[in-house]
Image (cartoon, rainbow, N blue to C red; front, side):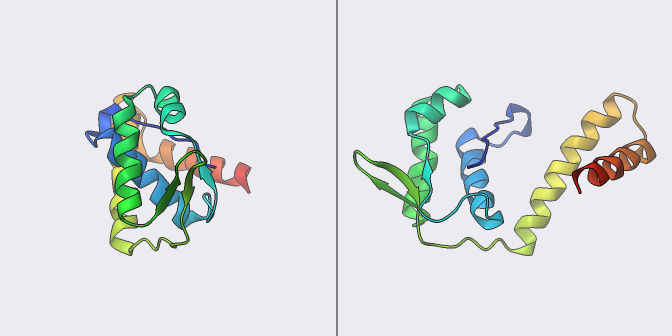
Length: 126
């Protein structure tokens, strides 16, 4: 299961962020085929958004045959595999880095300090 996180500062609508996180979760293997997603209501409460926001994301993914909803039993990852294009992956990492750098620079950190910390973090993860 993935931990959904919404960021109002990105300018990307919340329903789109949910869709992207599900797609990237499937592509990365963090969400597996047949895995049950939270209900619309529980995810909306968890993320503090309107029910319609989550419902819209789930509905769009159902239309794309990525999710399958069974009345009374829940919403599940469908049998489709998601393959992200290099362009999609590159655009997402650029967005993440742009946002990260904006925050880091606003606190006065230099590129060298940021790189050093990322390398330290990576060493502790491995």
